[in-house]
Image (cartoon, rainbow, N blue to C red; front, side, top):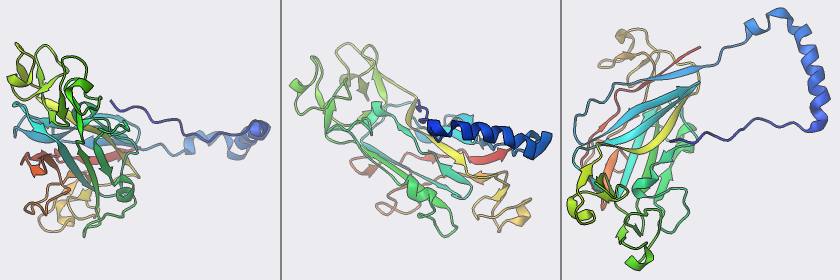
Length: 296
């Protein structure tokens, strides 16, 4: 789902080719035959995470998608066996920015509230502080960075052709209606592109079926350096639980927490929430006790 990043290698002008060739001829004589043996192996990252077992229902959960070098890609998904409707969601991840970084690219599921990169009048409002969090500008008392992502539906869209903006029904293709930007996790039995929460949302004769797991966003975590065992809350290296403050455990790597605030509304804004009309639907968030580890 996540498109590959563009090539970012440095480009040399044509006139530099002879100099590069000369450099290539000189370097072996300087380093000798053991040059390859002395190279530092690249970091290989992984995310140790408990698999989501289907409860609670509904719930937001994190699932590892894959690993490439120092990058681990994850899906943040909404699990619900009964169709849900919402017009916004927010996510907040807490991590040690000196060990872990948020990847530069992430994909919000455009089928839900629209394309964050669409540039249309009905594109959702999308806000992220990834750059500030990675720089350590949003740290808490423990020195952990807080990455926030918010996506909110905006204006109206056609009921099936979700990428099309509208004001009234005639703005949409024949048979479609102009509806508010509301995400629904059910799908109609025949017109599968049509979202629904109940049978009346579908064309006549069709039924609404719940999609158990709906991807909200795909994003990546990058290992910024070699990661050693760390205490569960305090940023401190450890070997056993005795090395950590009371009540904490020694984890095999650096924890990544999907944060849920314990403060009452509206003071809890910005944490992990599924919203409808600015009302938190109370859907719990499960991070699977995610811990990033590295090897070389």
